[in-house]
Each structure stands twice: as C-alpha cells, then as structure tokens.
Length: 528
Ligand SMILES: Nc1nc2c(ncn2[C@@H]2O[C@H](COP(=O)(O)OP(=O)(O)OP(=O)(O)O)[C@@H](O)[C@H]2O)c(=O)[nH]1
Ligand SMILES: [Mg+2]
Image 1 (tube, rainbow, N blue to C red):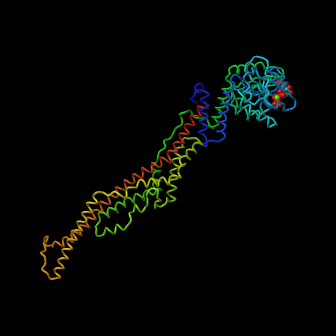
Image 2 (tube, rainbow, N blue to C red):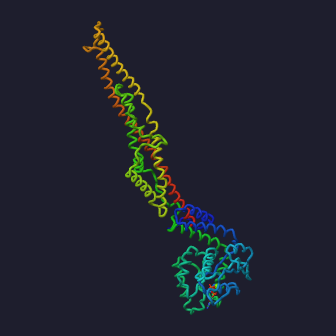
Image 3 (tube, helix red, strand yellow):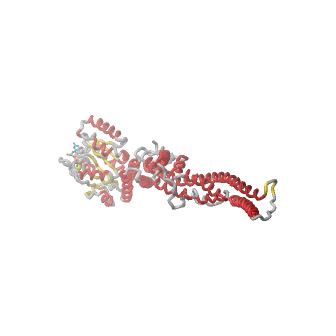
C-alpha cells in the first residue's frame, strides 16, 4: 500500500510524537510487547538526540572470526584490538575516536568504557569493535544486541565461509530491513578467495540481502589482512559521518519499524479509514424495550387511565367498587429508585438483547482489521451491565406523572353522573313520601305526569337509565383516552430507551472507532 505522507514532509519530531500517541492508543488493544517496544524507541530517541549529534557511532558487527577486530585495526591504523586465534576473542566493545571532544556522554550512554582517541582528522567518527553476535557467551550476545539497537550506523562484517549463515540473516539483517539507510555490509577476507570467485560471492551476497529486504545496501569486498577495499570502506564511513545525519536516519528507521510492529500489516494512508455510522437500530430499541418490560408498562398506562376514568365518570351506584381495586400502573411500583414489580426479562428477551448488541458490534467493526475489530466489538458491550438499571430508571421517568392528571371532562361527567343520582334520589324520595302518605291513609299529593308516566317514576327510572347509559358512553371515551395515553407513553419510553442505548452502547462503540481511526492516522505518520 502506498503511503500518502512524503518522507520530507514529516519531521522526526512529528514522527516520534505520532509513535508515542499510537502506543498510548494501542494500550490494551494490541500486544503489550509492541506497545512497550514503541515506547522504548521513543524514550531512546529522546536520549540520543540530546547527546552529541557531531559524532556518529559506527559499529562493526558480525560472527566470531569474521575479522571485526582486524578491520577495526585496519581502519584505525592501530593494533588496539586483539586479534586472536582462539574463538571468541573480543568480549567487550571498544571504541576508536576521531575527534573525542564532547563524545563522552554519548559513549557513557552506549556504555563503552574502552575508548581510544586515534590520530587523524577529527571527523566525529566513533568506531566500535563489537563481540561476536553468534557467541557461545550470552554476555557477548547481549552486548551486541544492546549496541546494534543503539548505534547510528551498522557495518556488518561477513566472511566467505559464513556470509550465508541463517543466524545473521534471520536474527539481524531481515528485522533491520527498514534500516537500510544506516547499514553497510562488507565481505571480509576476500584475499582468501580466488580472484574470479570474489565477484560471484559478492553477487550472491547481494542476492541474499535483497531477499532480506535490504536491496541497495552498500556491499564492499575487503581484506583486513591485505588492506584491499579498506580505503573505500573508510571513505564511505567518512562520507556518512560528515553528513551528520546517520543518527536521525537511524532513529527514523527505529520509529518506522516500531510503527509497523504496532500495525502488523501495511498501515493505511491517513484519513483512509472508513468509519461506519453507528446508530441505535430499531432491532436494538425493540429488544431493549421488551427486556425492560415496556409492553407491560404501556398496557398498564392504558388500563390505569381507564381505571381512573371509570372511577371518576362511572355510574356512582357501582363505581365505588372500582375504587377498591388498585391502579394497574401503581401496582407496578415504577417509582424512581424503587424496585419495580415488573417481571424480570425472560431468557428469550435477554438473548434478543445479546443478539442486538452483537449486531451493533459486528456492523461497527466490519471494516476494521483485527485486533481492533475485537476492541470495537468489546466496546459495544463494555457498559452492558449498566443497561438493566438505566432502563429501569428510564421506564420510571417516562411513566412518572402518568398516574395523575385527570382530563377536565371527567369532572363534568362526574357532575352529570351526580345529577342522574340526584334525579333518582328525588324520584325515590317522592315515591317514598307518596307511599308513606298512602300507608298512613292521609290525602295524597297531586302527582304530575309526563305523558302518562308519573314524574317520580320517570325521575327514578330515568335517572338510573341515564346514569348507566352515560357511564357506558364515558367508557368509550375512557377507552379512546387510554389508547392515546398508551401511545404517548410508548413514544416517551422509546425515546428514553434510545437515549440509554445511545449512551451505553453507541457512544462507547463510536469512541473505540474514533480511537482506532486516530491510531491508524498516527501509525501512518510514524511509519512514513
Ligand atoms: N586471510 C584473512 N584472515 C583474516 C582477515 N581478517 C581477519 N582474519 C583472521 O581471522 C581471524 C579472526 O579475526 P578477528 O579480527 O579476531 O575476528 P573477530 O571478528 O574480531 O572475532 P571475535 O572477536 O571472536 O568476534 C584472525 O586469525 C585473523 O587474522 C582477512 O581479511 N583475511
Ligand atoms: Mg574481535
């Protein structure tokens, strides 16, 4: 994949900052080793740039007997390094310094106490003779690894017998593929090869290096014994040292390598990460609503309205019976903070929520590579244990106030009902008075009639009939009103549930996606 960020545009500072942020963003998402490595690179870079940038630390690294110490002596024109026949010979690194002034802290940091200023131009070259990387001594290998990770320029000293050894290619050269700008490979002991084989050997070595991802790395044939190729190598090193860029190229290569370790595959170009829209789906709202007992609550809202409507507008003769029954909504105990009497979500409801959560995670992570996709899926359910309480609270809030609030027509209808009772009572009393007078054989009162029906009878029966019929009419209105209230309650509940889902499910998912997008952007900048 081609990177959009051009090398020249991003400074080392910016890349280090990007790597540090990428490591922080990757914490807990990616392997801890890669995260720690990135942080170590940032820390090491911080130290190296604070030390002498006038000096370039060049290490001669290679297998035992390849001739590192011999080459060290040949390059420095000294006999400082011990060249031995017993293997391994060099146990501790030592340094030859061309222009020692100010190099102390750098060599302290490199932890190389053996230092030898040499005659010649004060170029700023610090040449290090390393122990053998393939040593039987663990301390040698440690010393090599430490310095290979820290120096500014690496010279790999190979020899005709062992230049193809897997050890150096697999352990060092291939992992350092990003460091090709700060690497030189020499084939030492070419004096031991017949002249016609030298070129073939060098070509073979170049082929192996290309397979390591190190195409274009300078490859020189030299002989520490005869001095062949040594001036060329020295000139190449002097050129690099005079540019005073090896230290920053090395750090840039470290940053790039650490960034690609954070991103196991090739990083995408910044801004290219497709961010899916995460929203509260209908399926999710429905699943949460069912789990929270919304259908039961909505039904109770309708029933409660009808219950109270009948209690207020029903036939007064029988409606007191209604008052003995509890309000269906109050019976659910939905008050805030209290434990409601709603039945707990069934297994089917719980698994429906689970499926809906998984769907949200799957949709959000579809275009995200692993292991970030797993992190996004986890984020979708990271707060799911808060769902039950939050939904209970939302249901309580959305239904509070729905038990009170009587429509004005209830009072009018109630008054009308009392008028029918009053008519009934008047008729009854009138009839009773008539009955009493009759019983006492007193002269009766005149009884006016409506058509042929006497008034007291009309009042009694008419009142009763009117009351019952009016109560029936009120029931129709109560039913309609109940339905309307239930609809309103359902809407409020849905809005509340959508809010809970937004807060507890969608927001953490979006946050994780944003974190991933920022990470991808930072890694691309660091790896550029
Ligand atoms: N013929 C030939 N022999 C060489 C050359 N360079 C080194 N040698 C010999 O190879 C042997 C090992 O050389 P050293 O310089 O000690 O090798 P080294 O890489 O420092 O070895 P360690 O310190 O054990 O890692 C010595 O006997 C050298 O004389 C060369 O260019 N040609
Ligand atoms: Mg040696």
